[in-house]
Image (cartoon, rainbow, N blue to C red; front, side):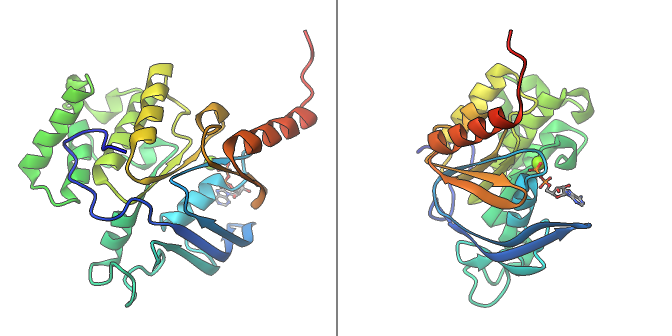
Length: 261
Ligand SMILES: Nc1ncnc2c1ncn2[C@@H]1O[C@H](COP(=O)(O)OP(=O)(O)O)[C@@H](O)[C@H]1O
Ligand SMILES: [Mg+2]
């Protein structure tokens, strides 16, 4: 697999970091979201599907360190994601935040939860700076990236002037530019138009990293070698995309009886 664009510095490590969850319990507010969840995630592309409230976002938040489990362990590439500076962790020596950012990044479902800067070019430049580029170099590279994508005029626009779908595209570019070893995408297709969806699907297919995608648009994960169907915080089915998506669709059809025309 090739990097989608030449402006990105090369990835520092082997592509598949590998993720392990051991007996994880997560409480969010009054909800016990996960109760003893264990998963071993080593495939390059993994889809997460399931009804609203099934736990897809919670799982992604756990994996990127935004939420900590009450018990159990989450490790990426052998490093405990909730205390990544521990001796013995492969990235020990850097700060915990840097360790985590190099390992894993999340594209939020709502772009406004992710974007920090008011001007578009700054957002991408920040990601590139976390990989060691100097400020001016990062700005130049960010502009080159927009030009390459045919959206050079976005660079100097206010983030607030972009549509939701355009902001989602900025979030994806920022995550790619940051270049962590594991990319987590939470319903990334939700606001994208058809060309945007096609471009994102292409980018995902050609990314060097391990990619986890939660989505309700099953066509985007049906071809993955692994899809996990979450149901009320439990794994209802786990296997190749074609089979798991079909199982979920059959279950939905049995629950929702649409009037026939
Ligand atoms: N901020 C929150 N505070 C408390 N409970 C939450 C919060 N966010 C989600 N939940 C609960 O956690 C469960 C899993 O939600 P979530 O992970 O968002 O599901 P999904 O992404 O699959 O729709 C649901 O029961 C939901 O109500
Ligand atoms: Mg969600």
